[in-house]
Picture: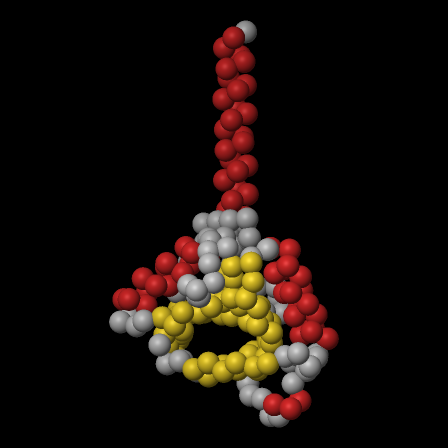
Length: 179
């Protein structure tokens, strides 16, 4: 009888391991993180800038707000968040610009009220397409480290910012730009 209990426990544990492994696989946990090196370009982003204590709910609300502006057509372009590495604001604070990437601005006076724009330029882009589910996705710090290693291999120094570009199919990519 005792042996039967042990056998059942082993079978249950094996089943749980198989379920956990297959779930992790299905969510993309084993997908490799590839850094693509691309030619540089200019980017203009129309949006709003925030420097504040990091609160996920507030950040999420601002992101949903910007997504609604892009979806409604008030902001044309691709939903974009720029995270700035800012050592002067403290560990629990965040500096970001959220809005839409556009090809060019035809008339600065026609920007929506409360919005500004920022222009960026680079000769090399290091890009990672995020295919994993949020539950198994690497942290932003891990991604930054992987990209930093690739930039060093390429002999480049990265700008102190990163772009997250959100596509209509709900996927996104992360870009780091060389100086």
